[in-house]
Image (tube, rainbow, N blue to C red; front, side):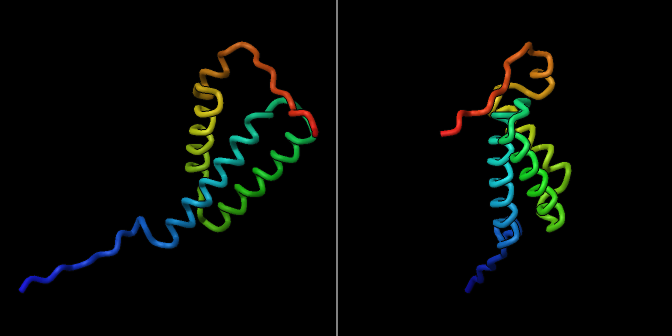
Length: 102
């Protein structure tokens, strides 16, 4: 007779699912903010505040640390702008703008 031992994968528990969901929501908020960053409109200011509050809450809950936030920010930047933050700082001027209120 042989026994099969089942071990739990530590990367699939409820905590990991919570972290994954938190990172997904944070990434979406970062991308939303990046689309209007630099426009100085009311929507940018609101999103910046929401992003800071969300980041602070996730840090307090120990779901995301500063290093992981920077990774998520860099991933979102590459996705939104098609280049790293360093490359974008060298690129010349695409002005951000607020979408029109409907």
